[in-house]
Length: 599
Image: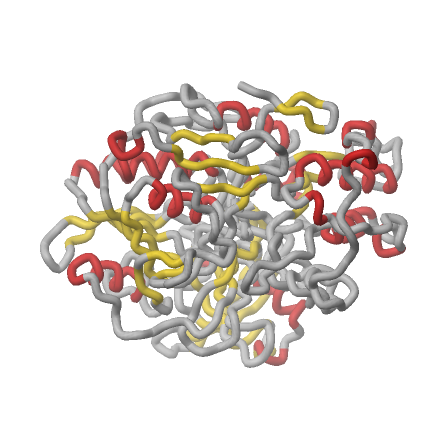
């Protein structure tokens, strides 16, 4: 396999390590884990090495036709704070420094912020020249590496972006010596500096082009990918707006965690926090209550059920491991046909065995139509999306075709990702099996989506469309992340800068503004825009999105219009999960941190 030189090191291509924040996400890791400024000490204690060691082992196998991938990143889940994509809970366009500019910089119009980074004769030194030379007060770094300075750590960041960042020529010229990047604690200074270097460009819809690159403590990233859990209540909250009037519902409740133990159910509406009406609670206090940064944090919630019954519950946060595949079943359509239903919430390694078992069940039950519920799946390890696409389509439709092609800033030919036909069973740093995957050979599949559907989930949709499988989207527009990234570690932090754009076998990658059900533009996909409801459990035949899919498979018609009037975020387990379309006519939902999402 061809290798590339990055920062003085010879490394294998990193094309498919991750595709996401979502968001958050996921940490997409496909689609995005948020900047974890306050990860739990419990999670850190569970981690003995950095996430980059896992990522490094993944890169080669993911691009080989003869071997299955070896895993990388998790979902996109960021930390469920505020901001456009669940970053620091401030007011910038994407939650950066709380100012009014595109990324929370100096209140500009979102398109300024400096000129392109130096290239060519003025090329920066390799990041390897600055690696492991950490600030003496950086408590995340190994004590043996605390022989450098904050200045050297920032020089590493700048050189790393020059080597790997997809939009390296759009990096603003920023003075790293400015007080906001130098004063105070190490972590906030590094976070602010890293964010200040991201491209200020926007998409056609005025969305930040790079709403996805992030940094996170290495211990937190490792714990997430390993499925060790993150602090929270095991509840994915849907937040209509961070400004009053607010409507906050429990969108999904994990089968294990403080939420289910307290009797919280999907659809429960929060009316008070610690005895104060939610419209009177300060934003930061509300976010801390919904998305606790540490285990052991107790809060009182007043909830109103779908039946109108009010009650008070006390939630004490704990480390909660997300169940990536909570449900798979076979339903009976109105025409008597067997219809598979798969609830897939996160592209993490432990999802693989359940996905395989689900497909075996569908195959054995002669399922010819499948509904994959991705509404809260913000991404993760792209090899899982690859495997699932193969299992859905089968060997005939995938023969000689590519799951994806990857474009980086380098002049190399696009890296090619074949479909994966074997298992992986990722353990530690390697695949441990290579068993043939079961297949369905379907020519049509239904996907339930929201703005929290991101990164690896979008890659799954796009890959199937690229080989001619009809994909019918039901729900809302996806988050819009046709990008991948892989992590580099330095001084106790993992930096995930977007380093590639992913396309399907037909070369289609133009969905930075999301894949839109029933849309007529280039990013439109056959299907129906349908508002999510919380009156039924996921998988119930009358739940609005699933009911719409079951109806469409029979008559090809969308239900009476309940189209979304705005976009928002759904949040899950402390991580911004993306934008969700809603049909209530309310402001965009800042679903700040629950679902699984990377963005």
